Image (cartoon, rainbow, N blue to C red; front, side):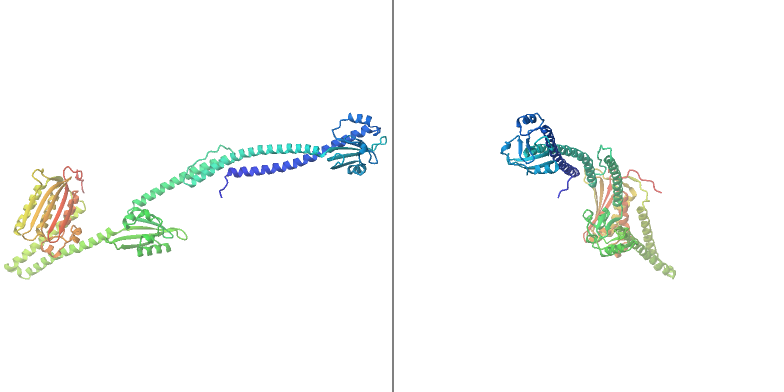
Length: 601
């Protein structure tokens, strides 16, 4: 059922009170007025009886002519006048013939007048055949034969007078009611309008329209209430604006965090999740809000950790692993929100995948370096011990051992130099001198440097330049770094290409980059090993690599040098058919080129 507005409540309440009060007042007034009017009529009839009594004093009522003349001069109403003697015989009558009228001794009004001096009765007149109001007066005169004077008026005439008075009373009451209802309507509207505005303002604030103002011109309590409401609205707007700003700042901070943040309630429904969580756990953040935590993240150790955190005030910290293709690791902190019972918890996920990968690489690096150093040192130590034991005196035995010591020393030197160079490149302490480098000359020098070894293996060397109408290709890079990149790639191609194979080096322009490709028909690289060939000490065939004298750092150096020169290196290969390494470096006109090299300590 629809609730009535405050205006109608006030108006109907005031209207009911007004109508009820005026109706009750009208009834009382009308009733009293009727009584007073009837009393006035009776009094008037009684006064007329007194006048008639004075007129008949000393007169004989049977002498009708003089009496009638005298009575005619009295100020009497057009009422019925009857003069009766002591025995009830009618002596004089204005409306009928007295000789034909009954004895009136037993009339009620005559009986009352005989006893009390005056009498009153309302009854039907047998003579006139209508209801009459009778007023009788005992004369107590000794000088007249009139014992009783009776004056009567028709009831309908009395009723007519009373009805006129009643109509006047109710008309006045009706007009008063209308005026009062109009005034109540105006007052109700005047009172209800500011209240309705306040109600509308409260509803607007409830829907989020903070700062809503009402305009009430009343200077009384309602005006004070309106001003207080406006002040409250302004304060609410300011406070909610501050809350929204703080909330926005908090969301910005949480969204920009490297760590993933999830807030859940006591029922483990997700209240908040930043974008980082979506990227870390591959979870749709927008659809996650309001859903159960365990439904989206089906990871039993994590769910166990959350349950423990909700039951214990201590912060729960644990490193968890996700069984994904990348084998991700997370350090998870779970803290319970304050309150009894707990209102929820906050999870902070720190991605330790790279940290664990670097830790694994460090361990592998230490193991590889140890192994790479151990092998040549063991050969050198064994050769030296053999020479000390007497082989140094025999030239035929001494020479091979000395060659072995020299070879292993060279291997150690190359390994140490490559490690130092890689360390400088990775730490960004290597200073580069960027300049325009002629790619054709660079390739030609590198191929000349390795041509003798290629000839010894009966390999075919091919240099494939751009088309004849193409201008010379130039790269914007460090000359020494670029020379080492090409040398390492050509050296690997020569080493891992069997006798009779082919090595091709081609170069061309590709947009804003100079592209150099080193292609061989060697043994190739399995597809599963391609993503790791640029890692330090990573070898596809470890035995063959050591046999060929490789340090396992050449491709790692190529990758870091290419990146340091704002370029890149990629590889594609097929086992048994060969490999192709592609280097891209900026041209002198490329926006990616380095304009100046920053100073380094």
